[in-house]
Every structure is written in structure tokens, then in C-alpha cells.
Image: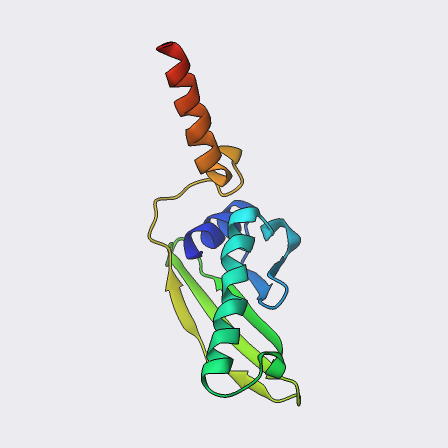
Length: 134
């Protein structure tokens, strides 16, 4: 997810963003692309599984967010600072502190249809090649 998020943020010239984990939505809304939303949905499942494993019900967490800070690309091109926090149903807030995530993929346009729908694009290209040999 870091690759998609960082490339989208660079394209939009963002220095910060946030994710509401429970609704799998990003702020600013321009980041709500299918690859990012797909990855964000799995985070709620992780929280739910962890809560059950330690004896809490699924609804114990009322809010779950990650605030992102995108670093100056001239200094740290591939880094993202992540500040996750949870708020339980009683209003207590749990902060984990700063986590540094890095992008490992080469730069790409996170809004280009060919990248967003790469599986669909590959299948279409394969179908075209198959058509050449009929």
C-alpha cells in the first residue's frame, strides 16, 4: 500500500493525508482509488481478528485512523511517516507513535488506468495477441 499511497501523494503534491480504517476512506478524497481502498479494507479485518484473539469484541474500537506525512522528496524520496491511533468505545485513545513506511517499487502514475487495472489490461493485451494467431 505504501507504493500506491506515496505515488498518488507525489502526483497530487500532498504533504499529508489520512485514512479512516473502519470505513476504508482516505482524505483527501482524490486518494480513494480502487488499489488503495482494496488495501485499506484489509486493515479493519486485521484489527477485528486481533481484538478477538485478545478477548475483546469486534465493536470495541470506535475509531481507527492513520495520519500520513509525506516527506520532502528531495531529502527522503521513498519515506512516509505514519501516525496510527485507535479510539475505543469508552473514548480512550491509543497512539502507537510514528511508524516509518517505505515505498520499494519504482515510481509510477497511481492514477493511470493501465496501472490501476493492470490485471484487466494484461488480460486484454493477451486476448489481442491470441487474436493474431487465430
